[in-house]
Image (cartoon, rainbow, N blue to C red):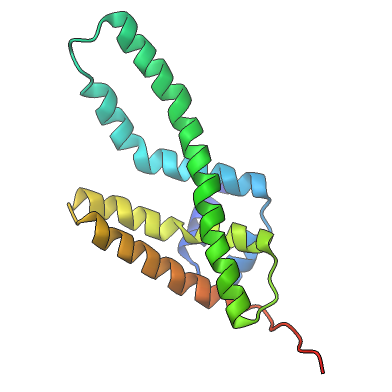
Length: 162
């Protein structure tokens, strides 16, 4: 139930209510949400990879490949989540500083994680519509920057010293 609640609120971003609701979730729930989202989004690719595996593999090497795929692919997803969201949150930190807003990196990290939901879903859809990767990346970044801007300006300004 928590995944679907997070998904619905992520799709409602940059609305204030959704943003504050998601910001109350713990970091573990946020990482688990992203892991499940990416697993669901890339499940068709994973299944296609296993189905179209080379037929000249022996049963032992086929079994080894599937085990490695089932173990290392999730670890790769977790690594990409942590690095990707951290880099994007760093960009959000620069935006926060430029806008002079009061917002901690931890809050930005969680907001960044949930903000990537719609761009990720659109990227997967665009991949199946054979839209070039450059256009897909431009759409991803545009939506992400717009959402981050709208969410950061909700927070109060840093008080100026007299």
